[in-house]
View (cartoon, helix red, strand yellow):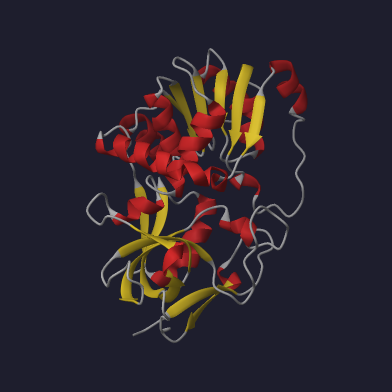
Length: 334
């Protein structure tokens, strides 16, 4: 059987390019007792991976140059030497290497029901993406019925989930995205109350004020930068700001200077809190149960942008910074 992997060839300076990655052919490994051989079916590409490509200290170890990149993946069991898994079972692993066939300890993956939902959903709305939206919004944002929730990166995987969960809570939802097509999706299919195209608006602060006449009670921040500066100027007293991502800054080669937000937080008695989904590991069963229920009830819609071809992983990852995806971006390895 053919087996390939994608390694981090060099650390990016600024925006990643194809030269930072290398596709290698390797041998198919053989599982030992307690291990399983799995074949990747769907692989997740996520903005946080850009941080792991640098060697700066962070909340997770950086990728090592010369070794395969890793992340969330859905895979099929090809060979098992563990009593709990059989050939044909499907598992989700976090992390699994960017590799077509690999051996993993059985206890590092979870078996999933092939019939409960599309397999790729376990990397999106029923995986880390959905739980990031669920815990970040409900635990930190604490939205109340009738409040205004603003979401940046609203057409992305996390943003679409946040907006819908806010609607379930009875909130008015305003989404910020970067194309008319994405805005139509948010407005027409997900029924966001208002949408803003940040590429078209020259005065973002005013655009947000117009879309949020009663101010902003919860701002779910996926992007940072000037968009977040504009939202912060419109927050209400006791606003809550969950910090999920800062994709507008991930490729910066110097530290940008923006408005000093501490006076705003002080005057508004606002709460701003960053988080990572691993903070909630012990509550994952709660999140999965609730998200699955909402999906079955039709309250949560999930869109994916699927790129086909294992070798397209670097291209798909780089595309995140151009906003090529609506919803979750996934690579199907076939």
